Image (tube, rainbow, N blue to C red):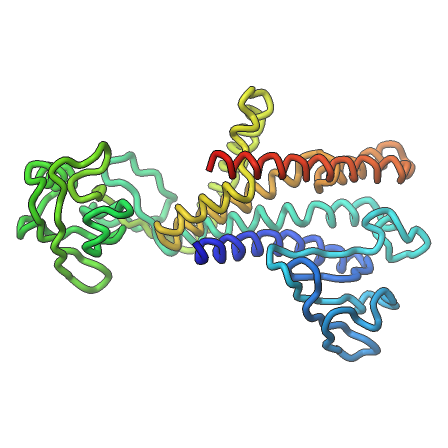
Amino acid sequence: MIITILIFIAILGLLVFVHELGHFLVAKKSGMAVHEFGFGFPPRVVGIQKIDGKWKLFFGKSKEEGINKDTENTIYSINLIPLGGFVRIMGENNEHAEDGRSFINKPFWSRFFTLVAGVVMNWFLAGLLFSIILMVGFKVSGTAPLSVPAGAAISEPRVTIARVLQGSPAEKAGLKRNDVLLSLDGRTFENASEARKYLLENKGRTFDFEIERGSEDRHFQVESLQDPGENQGPTGISIDDLKDVRVSPVYALVGGYTQTFVFTKEIFSGLGKLFVSKQALNDVGGPVKIGQLVGEVRHYGILPLTEFTAFLSLNLAVLNILPFPALDGGRILFLIIEKVRGKKNNQKVEQFFNAAGFALLLVLMVVVTIKDLVTG
């Protein structure tokens, strides 16, 4: 449980931090005054700030806080709650109209790219993670149609343990996912179907599994059940014919970002169906649901967890670009309206809609969290 929580915090922290880093980099490049760029959420633990040409380390509140005489006066901080990050840009809430470094006084395109940068960073992170998976290598079923990027090196199918049920005889004996099955009771098998058949025909006995794990060949004595439950099997494992696939770096980058485009379209399509579905709320998951999924996925290894992180990053990008007040997409919408009208929006009206949108998002988060706790 503790490991799952730590992994969940690390994933969420990475995704939010990368998102805010996008806003920060473009804002600084555009000449906006950035008060603070923080890892985690307040209260602040430690910060560093350039004052009079020298970097100064401090704990808690800085003596120079809020002075911001120049754009180098940004506070870089580490905060107590490690669930992401934040960036405080002068004028992001339409204040400091008298200061030329304020967000509100910058040209349209500077503000537009600052707002969209977080979404872009999350999107590129997803593509990078998908590309890494292709480069490191992944497994595909030897019986399913093979669909992998060009330039892939594909091995011959091997009988592999695809899943080990928790609490099963196989888990107790020490078998693990991705173990390669060399033999059962000294017998070799050409495919997973033959191995499954042998296990079923001899259920109730103790099997001698010869396994290849990394560079080692090991033997495991695995007891089996005489009357296994549905979809469990005598030893509690699922077996498949798997091929190892590795892709060269160039093809991996192309394939990774091609997948990102495809998945982006699928997420938007899913959102469209969600909004017209009567079961919309039941199909939405919050932090609790994501934490539960992290707990399930982490048992399958680092690559599935990396893929899950990529999907979360992509979902965060799509969610934030939606034209809803308080989200990046909502603020971009107000910016476009201002551009079309040729004059600044009523700031009180804009602030009201952003505050109302934020409140609605908080209410939705609470409702979804309660639903996940009750049903989970």
